[in-house]
Image (cartoon, rainbow, N blue to C red; front, side):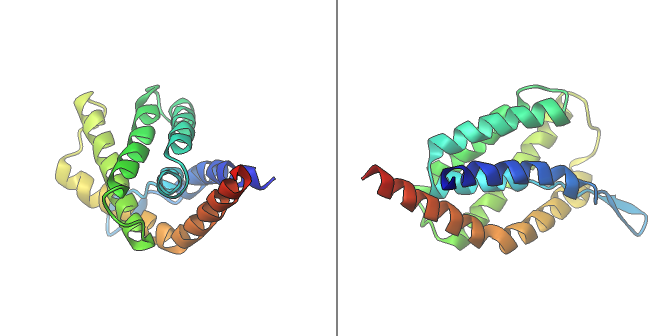
Length: 174
């Protein structure tokens, strides 16, 4: 039963994203701010760093395809970007320490990169006409603040759970 805990949490986080998305946009002084929850990709990055990169990429491909099918009209965008973020995290963590603070900062940087790539893609195909300044102020900054709060609250739990499962798996193999 414990072997299913890592993917089960990913499923729960995937389904929690639209629930927290209902709180967005927030209107402050006649301006709307979008908070985009990225719980699943943050968890997948933690899996990539603390557990197994190959499994994280498989989960990322699966959840990326689900995200593409349920939430956007372009199949393959998230299915490409989610595994890419996991691969970049695994590559970077080879050269830096796997401390929780470093992992948290790396995860937030990768989520910001994901948001920026999505903005660039949608600008390229003409689905958004928002300027870079407006994007940074009304979408990226609120998104990063909301996701950093989530990660600072649950990052230690992610690390503990994933590390415990990794240790259990290693002990079963030996």
